Length: 197
Length: 359
Figure: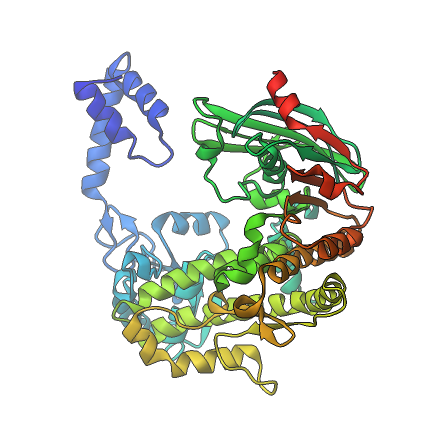
């Protein structure tokens, strides 16, 4: 059992996602034993990143600049807006290289249990952005969970007056996947949303 | 569907048990407290991934021991599967042929058990929750999609109740209601579809069990008014609109399949209020038999039937007629202190007093 500073370190490491007691102890020992230089560099870079990164004043993406690189990129289609739950999702979509519009990060999904309503998903800022930019298409790239679905319904209802086209991500078979290894629910959805070839 | 071998370590009062079963099943007998029901519970744990008596896992561990372990060999459609279920250090671990499962419901497609429990009487005598639980589990045993719908419905219901306690906008409410109505309607339609198969079977069997003297009726009672000229989803949506101010005042959801009920009537009298103990008992046993019939039709293989001494408080005639209804195709397990009652069954007899005390 750790005590003193080491226990404090373990406690803080345990707050990280995916880190349990054992991993936290191992990491704590690793940091204070043979790799002190690396550990201090890590501490510095954590401090720097945390202090420098804020939400983009336009789209809420976490960025080190006032306005993020996506919002300030003139080559991107201003009239196409992809709405995601968090910054990580932006990078997932960027990795597909299929999207050349702009982003908007909600940082939350509607969840009355947690007291999250329209204000907590930055909806007022979103609606003024949509009006101001005369956006043509909004892509709702949110998870198909209970909260995601209701956020999709909500945004679609609110935005329909101002945007011509509102779309959401398709659900179905993974590309290059094997029908055999697809779970039943996904395969069922793919069947329901089948299309002509 | 058969279980051919059962091994238990430190489950309830059973320290160690190991036995091969015959295809017909077995009768466990012995005095009260010898562990008969615990053996039945162990078999059904492999089918439902939890205690049939809704005890928590930690209550199932033999007193002063750290874990329990059940291992059973099942055969289903000529395929053998070994299910192991354990709870060690507060962690539930269930494996099918050595592979850990992530959802309990994965068991449903490997092990089909219909359990006749003394507590089943609550299906008639108790509140509507018991009846919803009965039909929900019965449908879930053969429909993963229904189970998924139930899970989603309860999640949305929880969110919707929280919403009703808050200050919400029109579109916010509509966005929750849309999904709530869609999934809720799907659940109601699945239940009615199940009842369409269930009710005729139940009426016919109950008529026989009662000695051709009593007629049974079953009705699905909606929590909102319906009409044959209107889609359920529309009736549901219209009703929610009508009761919105009530819902806001009481701050909770007042309609939906989580409030529906199933009404059983014997000769036009509501069984819950007017049925005798014997009538209620024979009705729930018959209901379980019909549940088993439906599984058999769907899977083309008969589920395992487990009787926890439920025939004890019936008159001879009814008990006899229920036994007449049991098809040979089922593997049957019975626990009883009075073996004479089951004389006609040609099942292997396992004397628990001797067996468990030998160790």
